[in-house]
Image (cartoon, rainbow, N blue to C red):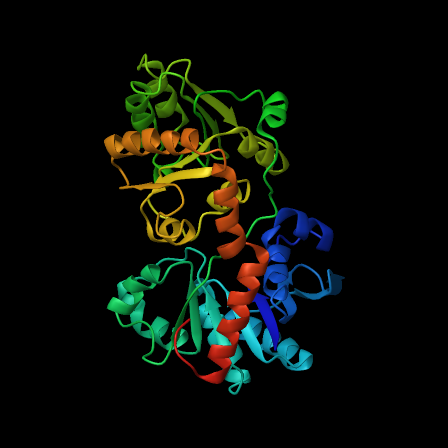
Length: 377
């Protein structure tokens, strides 16, 4: 099976191939995860130049898309390369590019196309008719959790014969490490030591997270929260909340933007990973935390349920509910304290369900089902 992965979102025009891989690590991560299952993989990436690069046995075909006009031109260009490569299946990233995928499918009507969701969301109601037609070009559509497909299926945006696939967006190269050694490097501490990695933005709901931490501290007096974040539109509100609550002042540490290479050390240092996200397409930080063996305390949303094995690993809590978060933190802290193999249990789950090899096997089976006209994965 030869799968051609297509990224219609153009890389910034000023970047060369090496810089694109550095800026977008998921470009190689997803391709290599799929290849690990025995699938032959090629990648088509829209960019500001034409070129071909081979990396870890995968061919990356960069297409200068600067002079192309709209979905039709881009779809035809990708179709030409897929035909030249002898693709058995085309895998298009992002439901937002369904129109492009449909243009590609018109050029290669016998070739099955799979769309993969990346937290794309529903199209506007008044535009449902064209989107229904564009989605209809896909033989399969993948979400991290099938629950994420429900808003689309309720509005009958997918065809009756479209196969829905449940596969996480990506995996992580992070690994567990020695907690004591990691803490010597990072300076993190706490009993429990809790880590948050995510923007201080409305969708991540940091204020509910702080309220939950404050409530949990009444029963976990040694608790310390460490927050790594990129963008921070709610930073002023977060600081006011911390300064205005004696339970939070001195307990919450705002680390700011942390280089991605250093996140692994932070995760190795912590006891628990917390997220108050209201919605996620998948949850890259959660995947990385679990790759490090870090026990999650995260909101009960579809992608987090899927990644945590329906809450079998860690604790899930209703989004927006600070009291429930506090209870989950106390329970998870007790889980960690009661088990000398807590990290091993989390990593074992990661290896079985979320690792590169696990995703490779799932994609190989999904491609076989889509190409063979069988049922949903």
